[in-house]
Length: 75
Image (cartoon, rainbow, N blue to C red; front, side, top):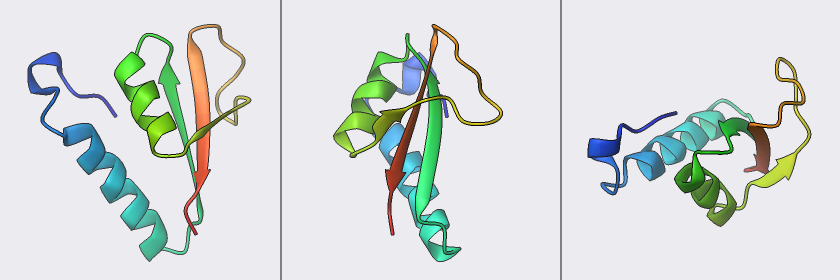
């Protein structure tokens, strides 16, 4: 997910993440995985605040110095 700079600070990232997790729960999915770039500092802070932990790359991602993968159990 990406929020354009002019719309940052309005809570849109939190809203999208909340909706994603709600959708996952509604469909019996208890693990959410995300990928972001190292320069997306706001996204990284938000994911970590929400309890996402950094993990190794998952398919279709690969080890990349500008990429970070996260996951969180929501069940």
